[in-house]
Image 1: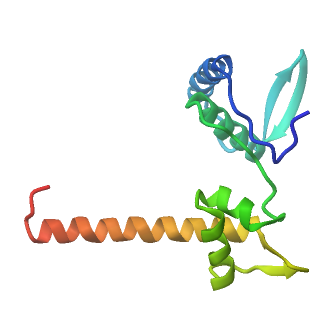
Image 2 (image 1 turned 180 degrees about the horizontal axis):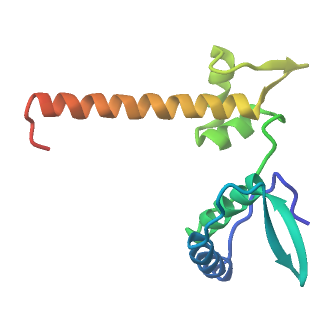
Length: 147
């Protein structure tokens, strides 16, 4: 059985089904509801809209052929798991732990950080990269570099 933290690698059939699901869901309007009714094996099930949004994101990723995983953000992770989340090497993630790029602690000889803190770091880094790109583009426009 697939647990919450295990990545789901979509098969070709999964990708095709996810594309059709994404197409169908994309045309639906949900308004400001609190829940969404779904039919599963003939039984009506009501789920929170926020959970449905997570499901739609997972389906969309699968439709693009991406491996999908969900994990609780209040869980502690190791430098290896942080490296996988950040798409960097384990030694670089360990360096981030040591430099205090995000809050972490030692449990015996092992370092741990909350997933939410690693994700917040990832978001800050993304925003900083986008800001730098915007500044470079503005500088290129100011200098009339024509690219």
